[in-house]
Length: 551
Image 1 (cartoon, rainbow, N blue to C red):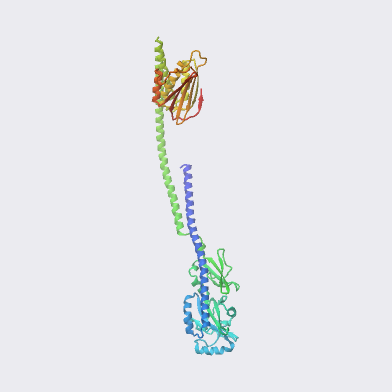
Image 2 (cartoon, rainbow, N blue to C red; image 1 turned 180 degrees about the vertical axis):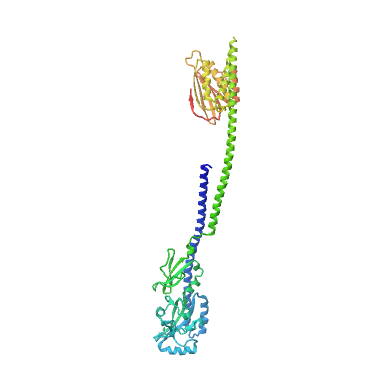
């Protein structure tokens, strides 16, 4: 393998690893984001559900208060019938009850009437230090539990004096003073009502005629049942701590079992909920499983599949590289064979052009031998003209085999050699060539060479007067648009006759020129005046302009 291939495989491997890790983390982040959304939704719903349940408690207690204020005679059956629907609808409710206000002076009267009309009340009780129900101590006022629902499970606490301990007493005094619903701070429920931490909701009931306190209606709640039934769904997502902010942050509930309100994390959401005249502090802490990195199964599947795809891609590219390297080696060998074959053919072609040039020179030499035996000037001139044409063709073949590709003729070099030959044949003129360094295709090289030779020969023989001091011939080559080339041959002779017509000129030279122009699809134009004559041949050529040379 080459270094480039190794680098390519490493790049693909790195990209594959990056894509794999990106998919792995993006999938897990998606689940983490969903968990965060679930936590936010659970927090919001938990707050709303607690507030909704508190509103239901307020409604129930207000209804009970209204019921006792506006009903003159109430018995246990009527009370149970009235409160049964509430018991089914309230979460965490342990009991709903009624406790009339009994002054000490009327205590005995109350007990006598209770024994006659009410089941289970024989005395007014309170809880002692051993959590046993005993006869309440003598006091000024009593609030004995007279009606309770459900009664069967709370028969023991019938006659329990709600006013017997300081916490409950403060709540009752609060509701009497404010005439509103009052919530207690966290209280230990007495064993006879189930025990545990809970809270008491109380509303004072007044006699409508005398405005004296008639008694209290109350609801007793066990806090863990209240929260776990109200927030059954949310507790799967959140750990919830609830404490009473007005009582030294006494805990009402903790789903973690760690009743330390300071034991919170950075992810804990702290909020407050108004409960009657009290404020509950509520901490929502996401469960650890929702905060931990998800490591979902799909992310590992994506990671594994992407890595497999990366290695398969590298394997496919490796096989393709091997195939192409083998193919390139075959192509290289075949190319070398073709280049060797082409080189041999080019050498043969050069040899052919070289032999053609030699044969044309032999032909020209034979004409020289024939010319020396002739006495007719006309015949000698004809042979000289033929020699010039043969020399032009021979020079073309010389330039072809001298070209490295043997596919074109360098026009600039050809013009230089042609004019040097003409200079040797006739010393009576000077020449100047301005030509870019370009090549002429082989199919146009020989006809163009003959056209140039005829025009130059014609200018040397006919353009200059014998009395001229300087006979000058300028050859200019210009590259035009659309890959066209304009070759101009200008002399400083006396110009052409006024009746000269290039299309009707009968000399063999112009016949040759016209025929060759048609052959290469060239356009022949001229311009003549007293300052000289300029013939211009315009033809199409695909060669590229390189530089400009002046001779």
